[in-house]
Amino acid sequence: MIVLLTDFGVADPYVGQVHLRLAEAVPGVPVVDLFHGLPDFAVQASAYLVDAYCQGLPPGAVVMAVVDPGVGGPRHGIALRAGGRSYVGPDNGLFEMVARREGVESCRILAIPAKAAPSFHGRDVFAPAAAALAQGLPLQARDAPLTRFPDWPDEWARVLFIDHYGNAVTGLKAHPELREIEVGGRRLRRARTFSEGAPAEPFFYENANGLIEIAAFGASAADILGLRLSDPLLVLG
Image (cartoon, rainbow, N blue to C red; front, top):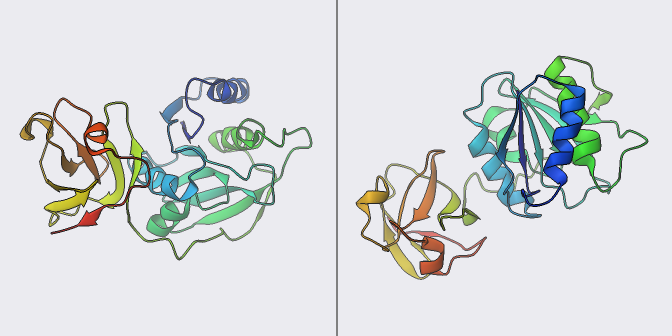
């Protein structure tokens, strides 16, 4: 399968254009739209989400991930092998946390086709590379090391994504010993699931991908707390 994670959103034509290219190149191969709401232009924040949301994918899956504010510039496009899966996208830090957790089996810089639009490598560079990998075909690429970002923390205690319910996903793992955090000027206690919280009273819990998520039973935690992307969290105990 080919799995897509991007900051393209679903209201614009970009995801559809990628699907058209993949349907032409690999008809019959499942293409899964896993996450098209990665935070716009936010490569570091998206790196933690890509790692968390790809951990359950089967061996052999091909992940095409794109958050690429530098598209058409000097950054390379890469095909990375890690943890038995292939990852295709920009070499701008988006796969830093995947590489840190899984280790890098191989990394290759992708050739840019002459007819590729400089503003849309997702469609014209990464989709064809993902299609080739899904078919076991060779890539026009050369071996090169992955660009690394060692100063990025293993976990990032910030709000990285807010879903349409107003739940706020963070880059902090839900370690069992964590019982209280502070965010938006409020102290929040841990709950196991939504119904354990009082109505409209924010709390945090371990989401299905192992991250701390801030929520409120039957209400938008983001609205109640005034949360925005990149807001910091403080671990209290």
